[in-house]
Length: 293
Image (tube, rainbow, N blue to C red; front, side, top):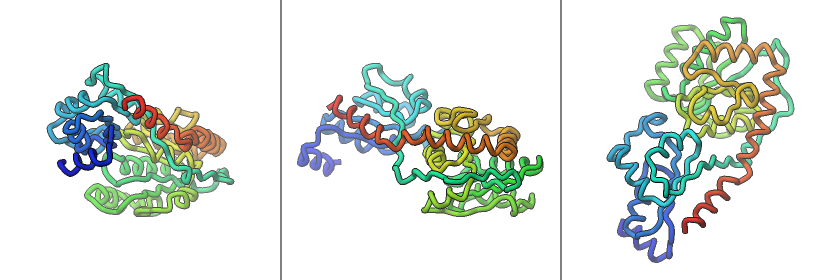
């Protein structure tokens, strides 16, 4: 902290900006140097990542209330934190920017009703992301007459991964569920998919949702947290009750049978998601820093 304070003095820094609530070094340095502090909150904490912060939430709220400004990445995040924040602290909801490299428009859609649909669920394989819910929903959808493959994209490790692989093995789903591992070329990967599933119980923003839309995937998301803010049901995607395997299966069957709707949702989602690539967040954050400086 002494070294950081020296850097602040040497570089004539006049405001401190912390990009996560998990690390409070920026806040401590701001207290040491008497500089204004902005906190950018990107996570629920316990609800999405199972994080228990040092000192607990009470200590966090004390720190937040000693900051000059707070940025929330979604209305859902603001809903959790803002009731505990003083009214004189500047608070703004600013959705994330997404790089233009994720604009990955399709020229053709899988509209042949006899073709198998490929659905993907992307992210760290852990219970909060809901991969097993997606597996069970695809299993049920196929029993109802659909032909759908589920592609799970994420590192193959951990107890939850083992639980899913055991379920796939025990239920003989190896021809329906594929573990594709960790991928880096996401545009190329998504280009081979038709549907994106977001089964997370508590998404703080939902980068995967927006990126899926930018690849013209028809997105199906759990109706919770920020996923509900990004997907307008039956317009830019489909929503289902969080954790409801039966309803998710019904949505999958619906898109399997109605390829026109699948294409419509994919196009609408793409048009909606383009706004996240325009650099609005960077401009809004800059303006907020200037206002507090």
